[in-house]
Length: 230
Image 1 (cartoon, one colour):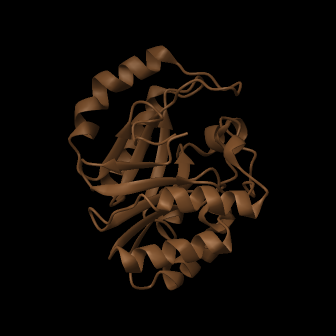
Image 2 (cartoon, rainbow, N blue to C red):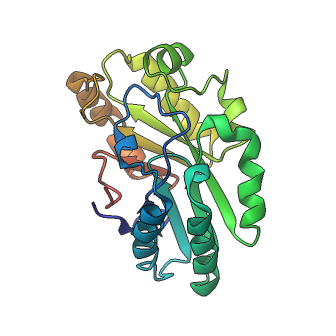
């Protein structure tokens, strides 16, 4: 498992993949990422210390991801991150937070009040029925405006069986025009029963690849390891 890398395009930053406690939601139909969760705080902290020790401060910006949410990181890991940002003069931090924690996001901004915080959240699709009844995301918001109340950057998945071109067109319109930052992930088959629609992916790449690749506010991942971690 590679737990440190650098993102050298667009919003340049270092990125660490940390261990976390079990995801509080943990019911997303498409996700086997939670297999990286751990219940032993000591093991979590040892692995996270190694990953964080590789941060150099190269771009003064760091993204912290894990197999759950920010709030599943241990207290010791949070202290490590706080010490790190002071030592390496980090001015910007990216974190990912599940919708269920929306009422607590100000705690993150308060804890890291000297840094600019960019909060990401897994939306997967703005089609409410597909997101909740099929993907079981546990993010039962109504419109993109609900996301904007709490978060800066939605993460979208495309190329899943059951999605339609109209759904994806609508999602792309929202992230390109309503948010300051977003991430687009092409779905890759994993150990779950959710499957990739290769025809839909081919259509999507033909229509959107250049648009997303050249847009400075969009992180575009064709493979799940395109950030260099995983």
